[in-house]
Length: 158
Length: 123
Image (cartoon, each protein chain N blue to C red):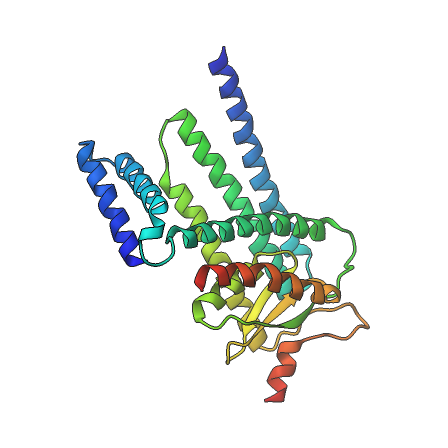
């Protein structure tokens, strides 16, 4: 992966010198051309195409934005609904992610998704304690988090 | 003629984005007042406020681009940093509240379900 990044940067700088305009725009177009070349020649270069991981990261960002919009609509509904017809509580979410970075990303994603807010992480990094607006559907929340977020994060980091 | 119509459309887009952002921030404020305890208030203040700020910043970005013809990177950076820091600060506030022994609110008569407190007791 570092080798491919260096090749890509070299191609970008070469493109900048060839077109003799030392601006960000020409650097960026050179970078895109380099990425395209690496993609075309990916069979002859060791390791997988490195921007594949970048694509997965982009997918994660889009998932995040989608969930953020949904959660906002959800919380606005809670705010304007008359009466207190919810039953908050804290449930535990077992997680397969291990490293600190992965867990940080997962807790941030949980905090910005509908009806859930991460409160604490257990000392052995195995459980995340999540505060839910409505404890009744915590099972659904657990399966949703496991299916979408954990999978998306694992695809980026592993 | 075409120039003016696109300008009108962009103006409407800016207005919609700004109203959208302000609406979410207003809802967050009402939520903070209406909700019963720390945790539910954190729900309101983290989620709705981030989207509200993002809406206002994107509106300002488009305004600066169309009116003054400049690309403001600061606004984009602002959105990214709010998105990065809001969940972390909510996590820390929630954790600190729990460490101080604040119990989650429930309806009167029903029992509080609190897995975190149970796990602490088990130790």
